[in-house]
Image 1 (tube, rainbow, N blue to C red):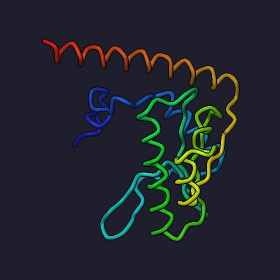
Image 2 (tube, rainbow, N blue to C red; image 1 turned 180 degrees about the vertical axis):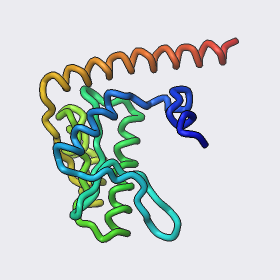
Image 3 (tube, one colour; image 1 turned 45 degrees about the vertical axis):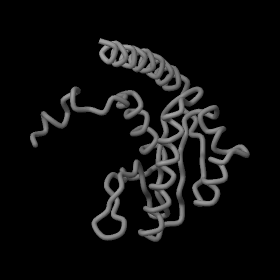
Image 4 (cartoon, rainbow, N blue to C red; image 1 turned 120 degrees about the horizontal axis):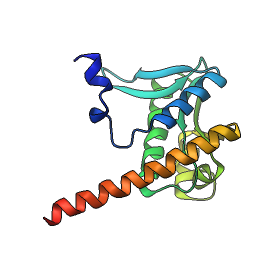
Length: 161
């Protein structure tokens, strides 16, 4: 497959957001983490991890504000990926890095999700972004949410027809 096909916007996942990817790279650099990418598990199984260092694995969640239901699932999936990557590669740290306390809160309070993360040994941290990046991320998230609503309405319209 050619590089052009891999970068073609039409082939990107609908949840892909360029600003979020830029923020993730910024956090990796500031935290001095290597890009994790494809990490081996057992046999030929692999998982994609955002970042790693000699002590552990990291997932970065670059989003502001309240989470939608699918986002809870993504973060729980990330927790399981971190657990498995650390277990099969003998790393200690498993951390999900959030860019917003409101997004982190449901995973630190007394919810079942927080209990699962504690049982898996996955910790959460909030990375404080500069105000200019918070504004950029918030704006990107708002625009992205509008696009998702339009896509959902369009899907519904197609199904009705």
